[in-house]
Image (cartoon, rainbow, N blue to C red; front, top):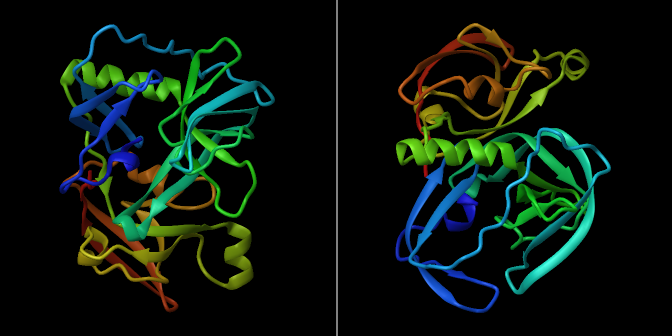
Length: 262
């Protein structure tokens, strides 16, 4: 995962195989949209895992997760089932620079712990169907994985162009206000801003905590269309017009989004 290799200043990374051979990582390429990183090492004779498909997964299907639980227990294997499909989650921490929206991820009951990130989620045939990416804080065995079809699409992009497309970056942490919650609290439906990242385009554009963003370029936000859904259509360098509700008043804010931090 990209977040596993997020440190860049003075950081060095190694790949350690099952037979305890160590390889220095010579290059890291990061996909800012999908929390994926490609690590290059100088090695020969490695046997790759087989990539399966995630388009035909079913809730209740048996899965196996492999990783280094808690950063200490290498080659940890846990089993479980697929608990849900097509989930949307907000992953990361604003204290690490920004949070990101990951859509269409797999929810699994197979125990995933800190340190499992980047490990494979496999089906009963031993094929990779996802990359373990996150856990739900305060829950038990609520883990998430990036679907392998998303990974394969990213790999195809990387192999054809040598890089990944940049993701538009606004720089906010938000919670969506549903229609029912909006009516109950006498506020509009939209994205309630919990935090604004320091130095972000949102801060430069004048977005403040407790604002409710109701529209982006005229496109309404709500429980069926999140801020993350709309931002996936935007590109770095775009200038966005945001309709904002603040302290009972409606106003228009213009924000020039940048490329997402690596």
